[in-house]
Image (cartoon, rainbow, N blue to C red; front, side, top):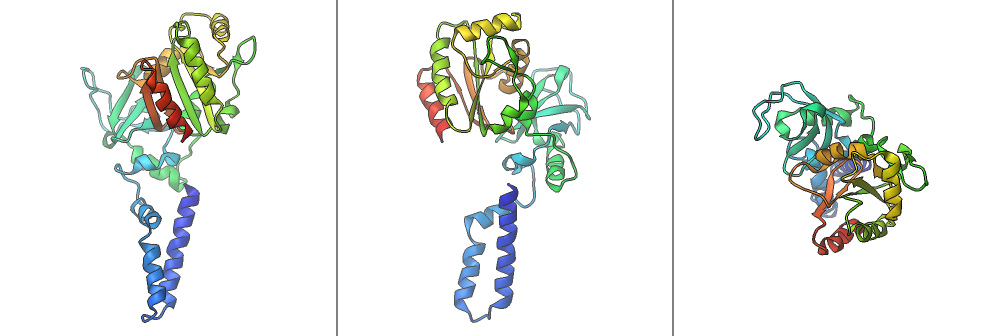
Length: 278
């Protein structure tokens, strides 16, 4: 994003210089200026110069880690509103101008952007006035994954997540009959450059880590997985209530959703492969 911004500034400076130095009668120079000014890239950068609720979705590199409610908001179907000034961890911004926020004990909610200070915080991050610790999804999962490669479970170093460009999140029950086949199909996608597969094991929240690790290795699972006791919370945070496992979610390091699909239909795996392979 910074590179694109720098390139946009360079183009604008070039246009200014050409206009200033060219004689009005120089048709060729004027044509070049008009072509540069009318190019799709220049137009896009110009239209996105000011971050607003309409285009903040396109500025994921500057999404803040934390957002705050600017006014009280009543979640659908609930009687108790969330109070103004509640702070929550930003899970992601949706394309339909909703902000998914994890408020901890106050729940995980999809809130209209206008009810939060997301836009101002995004502006502040881009301007360097507000510190951003790490990309949203990377920060959220950095210390909450288990390395499945060893016989004994161990924490996955958070630095490993920095190497991925795309995260394939799989929400499935390792004890299900079809899990081994699903695991094999997902592992093939994990081998693609820049893709990191993460399992959120369903149904194991009450099982100790050693037992869960043994079950996963017995199913030939070799990719990182979320701590079973934390998985219900992660599932509610990342999926919400509209989607149920088995499910796949493809996200960027910031948490922006690139693709999502239920996995009950066998054809969904082919669609998932196409999405991850782009």
